[in-house]
Image 1 (cartoon, rainbow, N blue to C red):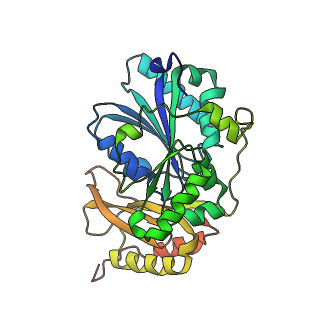
Image 2: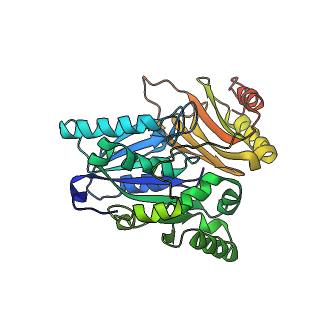
Image 3: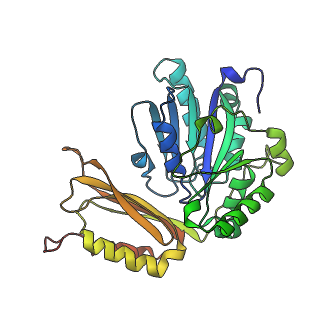
Length: 335
């Protein structure tokens, strides 16, 4: 929705999509693009500890605020208002310099309550312009997620732009079937394939695509209803240890765990402290697909800690934690 004073307000993009769809990959693409702008990023992680701001590339041109201990659309929604207000105040005081804001929601977020914030809070409405809701859909798992999760359906229904990731992991027929389903669910959104976040920024930023009238057609009580509930079967837990992990034992653990519980493991990701490796390993997985890449080196004064966030349906947390404890490096050969 564009208005007369839209240019005076701070354009804001809500980046959403179900667990593992590729939101952080897309956000990294935006942050590393040479667009000359400065971006404030608000990160939300579902669980007791977040790690996404460590997954983000940071080059000094963005301010990153992480929100965890809850979902941005419910338990910490008040924090979103507070953070947006504080960012605007510090910008006006000259303490921060940024031209736009990107809010990356947790994969379990319903975007409606997040979008409501820009219309029901007077301070936010005065300072910010909701530019667009961009939703990333995983081509491989998107169909099942739309079948099983109300949040995934809401993310598609409220989108102004839909980016379909991981098209290379499915056949042409399955890809086209998903695209047809997305068009049927949201005929007003632009739908495009995206490969590892590679897309033109002019298709994502400053597009003034959020249309309040169209949203009210979809959900007439949009401006009144602020309730939101998660599927009680979906829970999260975090594994932490400062002890280095044995790479071979860790690989065996995840191979066995994914074989048994993979269909229930919606998302799992983290930072790994591997024995004998000077760099942290960035670890990510969705269902049966997982892997790790080396990130930046651990700092001399930095605590080397493994943190893995698991999100899934009725996962046996204690069994997972015991299995990971068995992966702690004991100094033996072959590690």
